[in-house]
Image 1 (cartoon, rainbow, N blue to C red):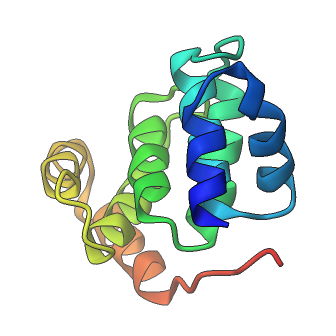
Image 2 (cartoon, rainbow, N blue to C red):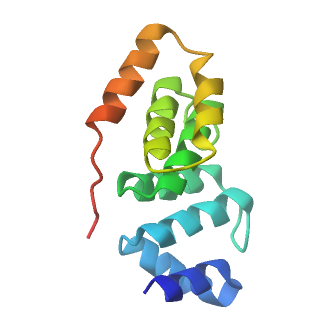
Length: 134
């Protein structure tokens, strides 16, 4: 399934229907790729709102690249209302998942927050558990 999702979602327009179907069925990799396509406007009309929606669905399932992307979207207010606590929460989770770019984003967001906000984000990240859709 991984190979089919990967080739359908990163390929040309012909595979987008399968990518959408897999994403709607709860496949986190397809959800990530669909979020990326919406964010960048690759084969679909650009929509930061839809990108955030798909990143969020994949992030909740434990997809670390989606967690990083969603954290950045919350940090800059693109596709989601700017919220530093949510941004830092998702970026912390992404870092725990091994995302190499997360620490730089974490530092940048933390500089804009109060100590209470940072503590709340860390508390939320510590309590987070993935929720598989299927």
